[in-house]
Length: 180
Image (cartoon, rainbow, N blue to C red; front, side, top):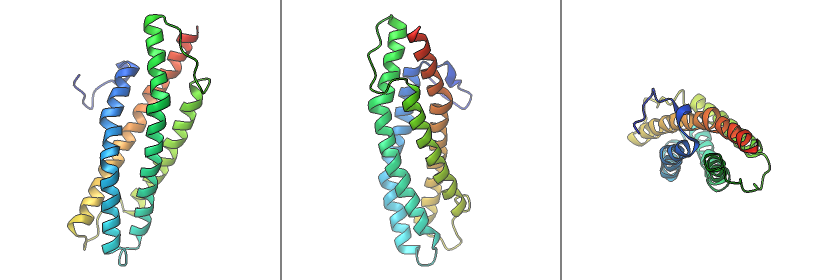
């Protein structure tokens, strides 16, 4: 499947959308997280005395990465397998296994709450970095940090959109169909 900016993700089955989220977004976060943490700590250590906003940048980056690690684990171990089981039950007529959380809306609400928190943190990060504009005296590492944080924000916002606006809506419809 070729994906581009014109891809209509609502046409994908839930399992294909989950695979896309795992490969394009969860894997990206896992790769970028330790690298961004190391980079922000380095830049803060070198420039934090003259650019006090870097202390908050480092704090926010560490918080986002810790939150996303736990968030993705919950999706991968609980929510995504259940959505795939609902899709399979709908396609095959099999009985849906009992979930540990009742209605699929319950974990979706928790995931959307996490998404709201991350979006708020990203908005704060964008604000204190002046939309990821490195200062005039920024070294290569400093500039790289801001470029990578901006790319991380774009990836994360697309990730949130795919889940909140496409996958989770499909999951709610799937549960309604399977329970009929």
